Every structure is written in C-alpha cells, then in structure tokens.
Image 1 (cartoon, rainbow, N blue to C red):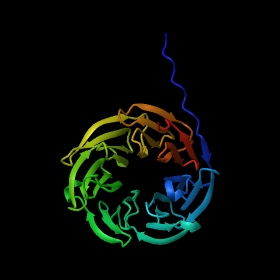
Image 2: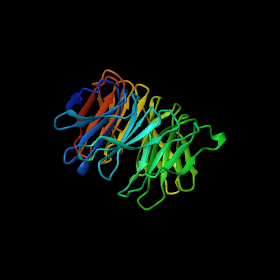
Image 3: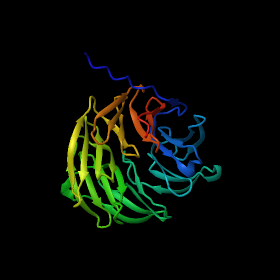
Image 4: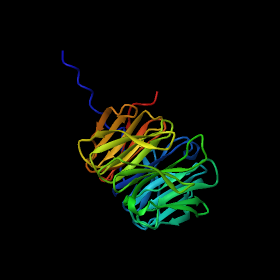
Length: 327
C-alpha cells in the first residue's frame, strides 16, 4: 500500500488589502490594550502604519509619522496603548493610541540607516530599555527610556570584523536582573552581549551570508536565525553564557526576511524571499507546511498568543492563517 499523501496546505483564513504599498512590518496587540479583540499593526514601504481590526477586517486608523519612508519595525509597550514605529527616515516614533488618539508623543533620532530593527526590554515598569543600531556602522546603542539616557554603546573589537548589526533581541533570564542582547551581524555571526558589562560573552559563526533575523526561546535557552543564504541555524545557550550551534536546516531557496517562534513555543514561521511562508515544529525542526499564497517576497510574519499567523508581502497583501491551533 502506498502511504497517503499529506493534505494540501490550507488557504488563508482571510486577506487584508489596502496598504497600497509593500508590507515590511507586522505586530499584534492583544489583551487589555486591544480591548478584547486583537489589533494588527502593519508598517508599509510608503511610511504608513495601518491599524487593522480583525473583527471588521478593515483598517481602523492610519498613522503617518515617517515622512513617506519605509516603516521597518513595530512594537507595543506593555503599559497603556503606546506603539513604537521605526522608519528609514532615521526616526523611531512613540505613539499614544489611547482613547482614539493617534499622536506622536516622542521620538528617538537614529544614526544608522541600515536594515536593523530595534528591540525593547520592558516589564510593567515605567522605565524600559531600547536597543537601536548605533552611530558606528558596527555599533549597537542601548538607551534607557523614556528619558533617552544612553546606557552604553556595544562595539566589537576592531579585529572582530562583524560588519553591521542586522537584527537585535534584548532579553533577560527569569533568574537574573542583567539585560542581555543577542545580535545577528553582516558577516553571518550571532553574538551574545552582556549589556551591564558591555562585553561580548560569546560569538558563533552561523551563516555564510548576513543574518537577517533571529528569535530566541528563553525558556529552552535555544534560538534560531535566518539569513540571506539557504540555511536556518538552530543554536543554544549554556549556563556559562556560551552559544553553540545545534544544527542547520537547508531551505529550497535563499533568503529569510523574518523568523518568529509562536508564543507557546510549539511551532515557528519564516518569511521567505521566494514568496513562501514556511512552518516548522520548534522542538524537532520538522517541516510542517509551505504556504504559497503571495506573489512576491514575504517580508514579515507575526503570531497571536492563540496561534493566528499573519504574513506581510511586497505584493501589498497581508494573509492571515489558522494553523495548528493551540490545544
């Protein structure tokens, strides 16, 4: 008997249209901030941020704060209804969206026009930490917010030759108050920095091409990175803060724009330059689905806590998928 063929991948649950520009960033806002129904923020090449209701499947607000320059990163703060947006206009805007407002209440001037998205470390405290690409081409600047006080600049030694930082991930172990930063670099390396001591704890050569994005599962002390090349790299962090490559997963085509682990740490999704969204089992890295809906490069992927997956593409569409719902 021949083995049964696996079922074909599903179609999107629905598709959002109306950005009228390639989609470069996605972020879900859930819980009290979204008042019951998740909101989806999308950042476009034309500099606009659209706020989508998943109930009506329409944009409820459009934010225009980046002078027509591409929006590359979006993040909400845990306190109140505040949104951060980063643009290629060298500005990071802080928006107040409470009670129907849509005002920029503060901004940070960035000193690098590269592709590197910022990262935050924020609990429920009024103060929070922000990592941004720094003044030097290989630097990462750490700021305390909202005061914009400089904490430090993380700069590799001259002989490291890492190139530009391409992606950043601030995090903190549950048992520690020390902020740490994972950074992917132009030379294909992933580096762990101790922010308090301004020192490089560990560096691994994961990729032959620039690291385009990474995600980290702090509970399992395990991370994943994607590059401009054909491989996903899985790596781990031991108790001595040493990174170690655990394995690589070869892809059919080169180019991963973003890689995101679902909040329950069961599956992950990648945004591919080959127009595909790929879904993997996080523990085993078994491929689960290849979603072929978009007609141009997929630039970003994001999950809700209950498992809805959104993907944004250069084809100006945002697809939403219900895959392997959380038990």
